[in-house]
Length: 256
Image 1 (cartoon, rainbow, N blue to C red):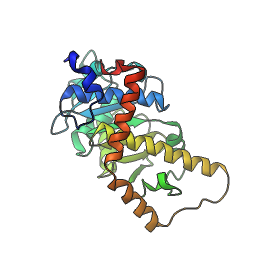
Image 2: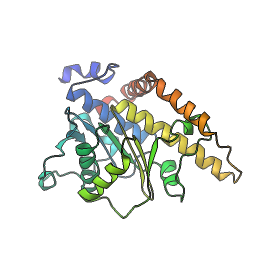
Image 3: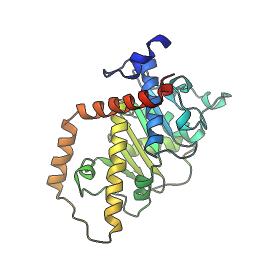
Image 4: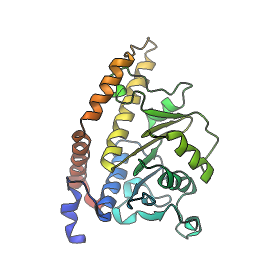
């Protein structure tokens, strides 16, 4: 397996084996550091490896994103109630959110939960809506669930179930007073959504900072733009593949 790393790291096809899934998820951790989405040794990314989504990979407790390698990722089972009794048990909040999401939310194959600066700033406002003021923000028009019921650390199964129910059939949640959650079928798509969501929130926060009135698109134009984003399914694959090639050139240790 180790002899195939060079090929696996830059594969541009849809991967099905667990090792390639590990490599992709490890790359996403390193990229989160690159774009300043990480926060100390907190936050978590996970990826389903079984057909039913219940078995999944996730980062170990309190390991910095910049050091995570494919071989470090924990293989967990959302149906295993003894998980938190393990000597290497994951962070409780991660188990409560990611474990329940993988158990109950079909579209949550890859789950990215972070506190990136601009998205978290927007999530801290009384109105955390991503208003369609430009092409990036319009990508998310009517496509974000909003949680305004933050009640402290998400450290119970009940809270994970509540979040999953609130997410519904959407891929993104603005978590009021907290951060963001993004889910998708692949790491490539989840990474691309997170990248553009943080860019969109940055654009909106900068526009708010001028104190001038926002020029918000009409619903018709915003929806048209969002659908145009969705029709280009190749771009997010290319985006992630290009970023992995950059990692390969600079520090390929993520794929170990």
